[in-house]
Image 1 (cartoon, rainbow, N blue to C red):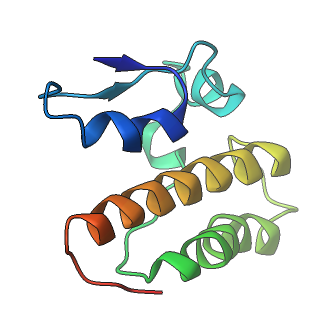
Image 2 (cartoon, rainbow, N blue to C red):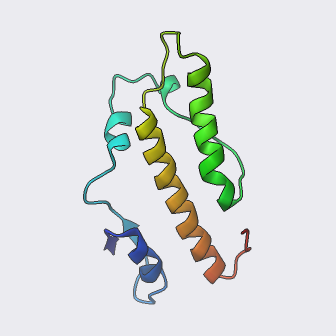
Length: 113
């Protein structure tokens, strides 16, 4: 089943008739279009890897994705995303983390508040 609203994803996942639920946005966020540019060197793409609690995701990701570029702001290399693009990316990741936190909680997984 295709779901256009992320809030509906949780509901669809628990339906016995659904074996696969896919969140498909009608209009992808602007950062997706920006990061899909084939001329961007993969090394210049935003990257973050780490184990975090759900409440840590947004502040730590934002600090990580902005810090290196602010420190080198006078150099030629800059973030491929604007500050608004980073904010949008962080908001989307944070929203997904919270949805999957709720799904894991309902499935009897660990409660990492």
